[in-house]
Length: 175
Image 1 (cartoon, rainbow, N blue to C red):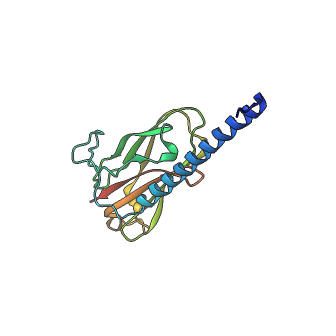
Image 2: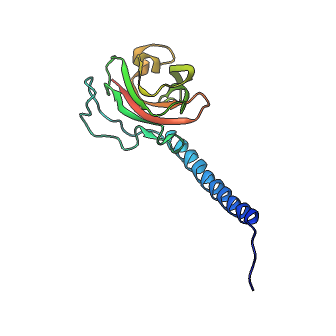
Image 3: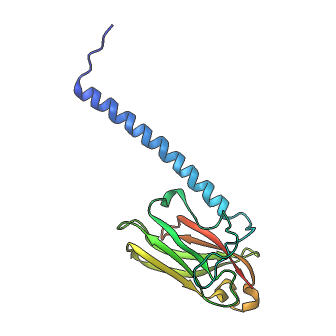
């Protein structure tokens, strides 16, 4: 038994297979993103120690500053939060943005051991330009009361795009 398949039928068949493959891989990517976001809200257990010269000087926390599945290939954390721990010095995080129009806006929030959220940084001026973007904030912003003693402890930093998609997260210790 032989089948005669016309070119339009073959094209339709191949297109259908391609679309199904993309749909299945897209679902997996969504599940990976959801899992990544769940992990971001697990109680932090450590942090990557870095000095004010941008050097990692202590053990690296393998959970810090991973890039979410949705943003892999679009940016990387070039230099993690530093100084970390901080004793009141401004904290800096350096991102390396790849490509044009890959990330729309940026919002940085923290959540502390008491589950209090604070906005640390906002860049809402459209898409991010390729290159290095340095995020800087005063650690007193970890505290809702803006009292330094309330900022002490391990704080989770969450970096989102303007559409509330989690990009990366890490931890900052305030001493």
